[in-house]
Length: 413
Image (cartoon, rainbow, N blue to C red; front, side):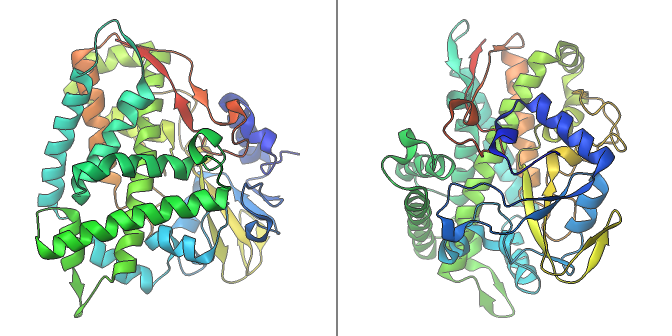
């Protein structure tokens, strides 16, 4: 039996885990799993199991049916105090009609003109980051590049003051290092989580107050000015969206860029293909990078009525978990899914969600960042090399780390 709730499963290497998911796709595409492990206090841990969805078809079907599969009962494996969840998940943990209203208000901040402005800043940031690296020098790619790029992008988008940016970066690291004593200090995981969310909310409140007094051409200004039917976003809603955006946008891009340079090192033929026609092949390479990285391991939903998936009865109230990386390696959808292939077409990955109302709002911004960074790196330093990465679960800091968070990866230009 393949136990997705065992810490040992997530501490295993990616090849072992991918092989296990492949077995589940063939034999048990919808399997019952026990309560997932968690570093949270007992009162916030799951006491029941869940149905694991590992195929592309079921992940996509559940993603697109917000009526039958709700998000408001919780989308994360790790539980927490309800106030902390509300202060950090924003639209991620909402269902229509609340989700519809919030998404319409927030979408007004992501106009084509504003996204175009963001793209220009992203390209400038990519140039600055790569230009600051010395040829022949070994450096930590995660620290110098993969973390720096998304932090700059998010802070530029939201209009975060320069003096607050290191604070934001440090608080995000706390969010993902709740069990790491070097990051969380002597705080319990719950205390560290509250500290991080509270700190980010404070930055959001200060930035929003500044934009109300002095509007600028940034996303925060758009959020404080947005209205729908005469009603705008209140302070708590703005703060919760800020926390969600900075945390999710930072970590997913950090993970994707790290995995991309690893793939371009492992699959040398794909690097040569890309270098041979960088402009013509970069879009396909970006989509393949996102599929390959699948930076979000899984999200959860709760069934609102009795139903069936792949012939398996699901009862009302049952939780289901959508495993995106497994879906993105579904052999019935992707030819040779275990190969990084920049010419893959079509590439219907579900790394941004499988469609439906929760499709990632920042998907295009993420694509722009990966494209800018890969283009800059291959233009200025096409012969880069990366070494073995350190991962949280490898360091025994968080054996339940489903995202296999890379903490360090040496790189030489």
